[in-house]
Image (cartoon, rainbow, N blue to C red):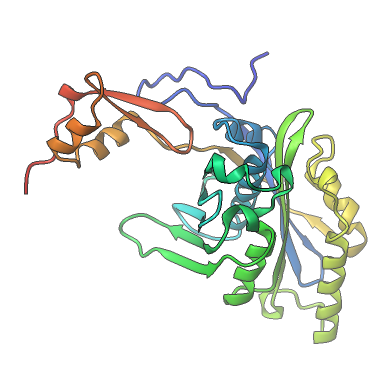
Length: 319
């Protein structure tokens, strides 16, 4: 049986050989009946292995990237948009760049840029996002194409973990009260990554059976306390489905499991796109990029290298 996380030979030569993989129930929305709580449980399953194995990063970097991928998929699902939703962290640490994005169709991609010499100075696999990223900023962006205004929220990197940083973003923005739990790690089945996201729903949003502010507060606090009991081992266990895990956490609170949504391997690079990028350079720059008659360009997301014969690339006209 073919391993779905491995690259396949595409029918279109313009596309690189990357995994053709979709997880039909990658995102499991849910809510608690008659309570001001809704949420999503994201389980990337084999999609995490397919995405994280494209780069030969240390485990501590793969763990951070896996958390970012699961978080991005979960946050994107809460929005109504056409285009892509992205998480970007830029810092001055051993991982100066972290990026993940998810389209409205659920195609997911991401990467982290690491500096091996600086990673070696950290406490190995125990290093969390704060130590890896250093000082900098965290940005969440909705990009609906060149004809639409881009929405972006930016905050400074604050906190030890990526979940802490996300909480800082929620606290400093006008978002509804939210809480995030993230897990990523190596399992016997390969890399796995999961996000549990809870959101407090305003009374005017349709939760009208809870009649007082105190009841709202109690219901929200109870949901947070129950969610906080979740273990990383549960979140990363393929044998424990999203509905089963949610039942384990919230069955006494009127859990309603909504229809799941799919996620898929989502690198959008192509030979044609990169050729268009090259044509924006002048001839002198193209000549400088050329080695042995070829120009090489590598997609940072899927780590695929495209090669172009120099005599086939026409540079931009001089100004």
